[in-house]
Length: 115
Image (cartoon, rainbow, N blue to C red; front, side, top):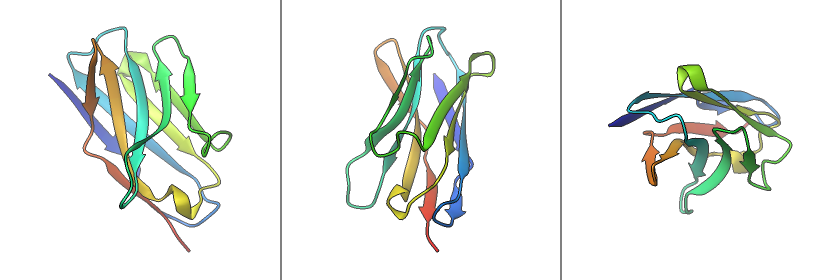
């Protein structure tokens, strides 16, 4: 069993920054991909950023250059540094772990960008 716990969401003004954290526990394999997805009201869940166990990253075009993903494999933690936040970044952000052909999800953390 795998458990993911996100933290770090909240309310921030446009142009501000936030860092999300996700701690994974349970049966974590050495080979996996960790990442972040988000879902805004009335929209489908979309990929924000992912990082493989080899350090290969992938970002959505809308966050490229503003968001940065990192991970600490020893602590089974993944981070998302979000800079220059925009109102359209408002969403529930979900941590994701992909291993052994299975997806695991956190409960989500709300990020609201508003003045």
